[in-house]
Length: 97
Image 1 (cartoon, rainbow, N blue to C red):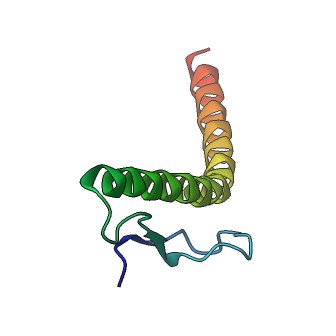
Image 2 (image 1 turned 180 degrees about the horizontal axis):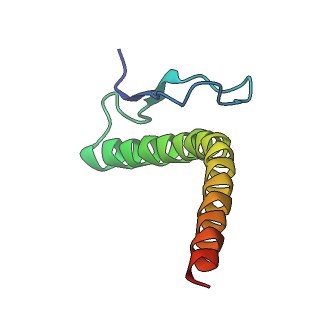
């Protein structure tokens, strides 16, 4: 069996978070290490570096999509909270007059 870089993540997004159908909250990726079979140590580490870069790229894309999906939901919460705070400040200002 050839060596691989294996990465698994398990996310727990807030309930009712709209997510694209291509995203799953639990996912495992395996990236083969090129030049690992009988190659020199230098070739092995070059292959390992390439596998790590590939993992970084793919995970970055997937986790960014998750961040965007959850972030939109959080932005809506914050907008409502800001409006509530501004309304309270207006009421306090009326009491002082």
